[in-house]
Length: 287
Image (cartoon, rainbow, N blue to C red; front, side, top):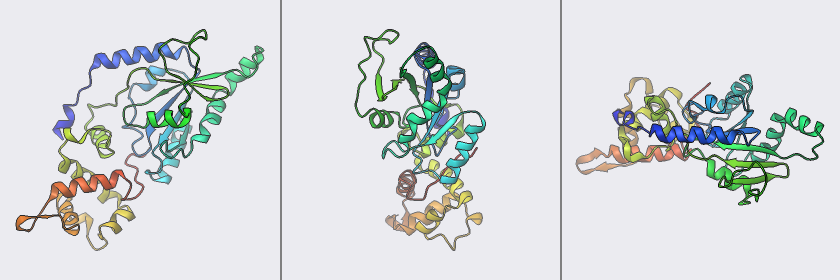
């Protein structure tokens, strides 16, 4: 996995993004952070707390349809203990998004009271959306804004060039300027992002990555995975993950000349099936 260490994002790029987000923070009342429900640690920017400081926040655990439901409940509880509201959503199907506006209103209830106390009738709340690449931010925006670009450029305090969307009668959303990156100098984070397809496969050794995924699946033993490859009678404790890849390839008839197993093809197939949740709803990181 040495390739993983070589993925270096441009520090200058990140610094610019941080500055853009910090200047936009003044325009919003809260921040919505989108993360991948299967890898809630690896799919976050490690500096996010520093960047948004004490702004109220809602976390969206996206792709919850592919994650283990009990694990997602534990993550929601974990964030609640940290004083953060989190909701499980699937931005592709729209599942859970009806809870987004009510969650924002709840998180900002004190702010709403203050604005109303100052005589503002139906005050508008503003929220900024942040997330690392490939976590589902654009699906979220397309779903929730229903392509409705908010015409707010002529209002005071709203910068030209920022993308504003109206998402409810009292709620406007700002798409983050710039891009946040995950913590790539951590090999495990890199692997977990690669398992879910958040990192381009071309920069990784697919077989090595799949062997690492199998290490994890052997420990977890998801029922769907065992059943799919008929591994009920295979002692997963006694077998090394590369050997298991060969067994899976053989079961799928992935042979090359001389009866050898095409492990590369088997690896690609296994990664695809993991990413499309055919091996079951699997969460890789637990609180």
